Structure formats: structure tokens, C-alpha cells
Image (cartoon, rainbow, N blue to C red; front, side, top):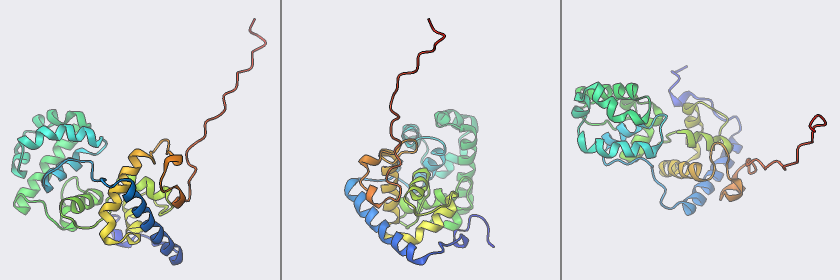
Length: 245
């Protein structure tokens, strides 16, 4: 059996007819969400593959909005992989501190950019296999980068894509790599990047982690769990203790 990160070896769904039905349902989900969110896009701001790579590293355990605030000045200051690799660790830590886990992120960014300089002439590679050899780059980051910076179809399983894939009954897996392997065949290649944008937008606005807003969900009829929103418990007056005067 291949290594854990190899999506080709993950288990397939045992029921091909059901998977065909799921694929048809995914097409309807994409069409419906596309009408609801015609401007859906990746929430991170970037103007080059290198900027997106840096932003994705910073986005770990941090909101996209916070990352965009931080990178607005950073991207004006550091424009090449060599410049990112040369910035002193303590300086970069200070500049990205508000994104959390700043020491490890600064170390990862500098190491990653050093690898870009030494192995790829300072350019971000376009092949998944090459991206996965870089510090701080897993399948999620690589697929998001390929799809959004180079237009190469892929499924980047972030927290929203993973959560909604489970809620929509497209997978029972919890590991992001296994989720990617299971849902990718359901989505036409041309729709994979857009699927992620639409699911991410819907996950932020409606199908949130703590309290999905099922009554306002445009794909509730396509969801096997259309009533996940907990109903409010009726409030009752507490009984008066007989020990209270």
C-alpha cells in the first residue's frame, strides 16, 4: 500500500450506482450554488503564485481576513522568493505575529522560499509532486495553489469543503486526503476549483460549523441532512424551591 498522502490508494465507495447518483446530485449542487453566489472566489488576496503560497501558509489556524490584513504590507515589501528567504527570522515573526503560530510559520516560509530559490530558480512549481516536497505544503495547499494560481483542476479540502462534503453525504471520511480522493471523481474536472469556491462561500455564510442555517439553505433539498439546525428549547419557568422563603 502506498503512503498516506497518496490519494490514488484511498478506499472507493462500495456502491457504484449510489456514486452515480451522488455525481448527479453534485452537478445540481454546483449549479444551484453558482446561482446563489455568482461572485464566489478564493477569499485570500494574491497577485502571483508565490503570494498565494505565502498566504496559504499563513492561513493555517487563522482567518482569511486576518491573513489579508497582514499580507497587504508584506507583499509590497517582499516580492521574490529570495527576499522572503533572506528576511531574518525574528523580523518575519514580528510581522506575522497576529496570524498565530508565528514562529513556526516564519520558519516554514523562509525554508520553503529557500527551497524555491535553490531548486526551482525562485519560481513556484506547477506540478503537484514537486509542490508536495516543499516545507509547509500538503495536498490541500498544493491543490488550492494549482487551481487558483495556475488553473489546474483539483480539490483543496479545507475546513469548509471537508465539513460540507460530510454533511452532504458525499463521504464518511474525516482525513482531508481521503475526502479529496473520495469526492474528486464525483466532480467534473472543469468544476473542481469552482466547486471549492462555492462550498467555501456557502460554508462561511450558511452551513456554518456550529449552527448551520438550514431554513435559509438553497441546497437543503439536495442534502440528506436538511434539518441539522437545532431547534430552540422551549423556555419554562424554573420550579420554586420549597426551601426558599
